[in-house]
Length: 337
Ligand code: DAH
Image (cartoon, rainbow, N blue to C red; front, side):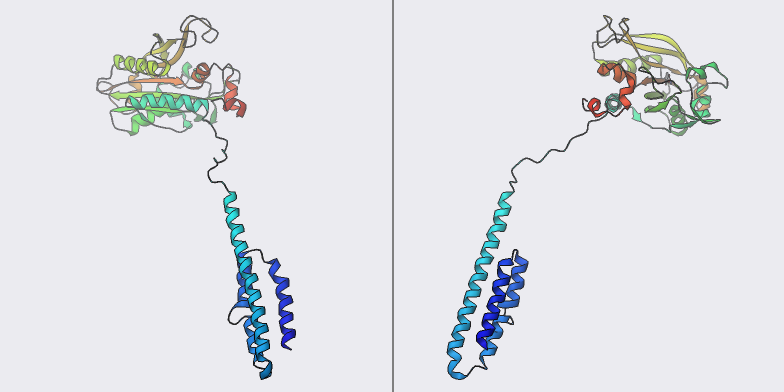
């Protein structure tokens, strides 16, 4: 009887043991066969039924059998441990990681960031306004009378009769003058929209940065100092500049600033159309009507304002001759920046 039990158990173990591949299965095996209430221990229970004179023989048999199972168990345990250790060593943690492809910031964002950092270092705050504007902020408060021909300077996308996609960032000036206490010294970057045919030189949306300083005794000399300081920081200290009189409804007097072409240093090239000069911004003293519209007394306070395009300057800066390439999201282009 006991002989048969032992040989059954032996063949069961021979079947199970070679299939064990991990520590969990090994532990299950230990509990089933080798623990105190396991199948091997129960053999000793069977020993009680064996006639007294045969007990030593069978006791010996069971002991030998148990020893051999324990030995197999231990050697399997050791080999599992060493194989998991060698698996760990297979991972070389000193190897450098695989590098993920890194994005770059869009060239227009880079130009914008550069502009912002210069103005911030000069004490300007940054304010953002809505891209969908009403006629009041985009035109009327900025001294564009209804039917004023200057409205035609900026071909407009209308959302409704009096709601537009802002044609410039200048309406944000109205919002800050109405909502914030003086003194005000802020720049207002953002995207603007105009109803223009798309070509290599123009697009129906682009980016601007407007600037505004309103306080007591703000002068034209302050404006000039700020613009020159910005231009020398942004375009290089070796550029020359000139101011030309100009017209904007919201400034009086108004000017435009040219700098010597930073590519040919003023000698004349394709980029500056062989004039040696590049027009870079519009500016002026805030018109008294605009101050009044925004709740300020032009007898008591004054201000200057300026506005510049970001896209065209990025074009010039990187020597790109088609503005559309900025918005095609072609990685072969974008990865170069
Ligand atoms: N808003 C003008 C444009 O889009 C640019 C501009 C000119 C802004 C003079 C100003 C300014 O703030 O003072 O053409």
